[in-house]
Amino acid sequence: MDNDFVYGRVLLKLSGEALKGSSDSPYCGKSIKGLVDRLGSLVDAGVELAIVVGGGNIWRGAKSTDLTLNRVTADYMGMLATVMNAIYLRDALNHGGFSAEVQTSIPMMPVASPFCSATAKRSLEEGKIVIFAGGTGHPFFTTDTTAALRALEIDAEALLKATKVDGIYTDDPVKNPAATRYEKISYDEALAKNLKVMDSTAFSLCRDNNLPIIVFNFSKPENLELVLQGNTSVATVVSE
View: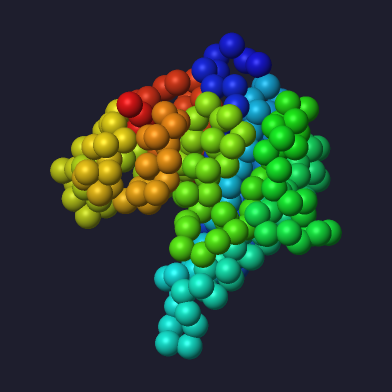
């Protein structure tokens, strides 16, 4: 592994919008090509990389409910959207010359293999990118919670939350120009302040198991590498 990196095995939480870019359709070939190049370069440098990708470019689960669709059904539809994104990303990575596989929480062979932590860890050790899809397999849990859970199950050293802002702020920086960025913040403070960058279940899982959460602006291509180098000037670290 590149000596500049302070994390050897990480889980990256991506939104579905990362596959969409500025396109009006769910997928943008140019954005996905850039994503493949960025992720693949890290694996080439020795980083063991797992990914949880959301489904917001296709379906937003609970936020898409109406009078004819209950929350449970909406959440299952959201899980299926994450599977679509995961297999698209897997094929894009494989086409780019990188080895990737998808594991799902809901059995759906031959689309993807069922989740197995031992298999996932072995694949990571072999230099494969492992993409976890289907959420936790249960409604009422977000992909943030999935990311925290899977990160713990594969013994990741950090959970990287890719967003559109440079970390966690005291207020919405778009609405409040006076908002300031936290460079570091504790789990308890993030929960007490009800900071919305991740849901409370994900924060609690990470706190109870001392898993650092690093929130950063993924739209700046250089930031992912800087975060892996331990640079906190471009991110917020949530830890003890």
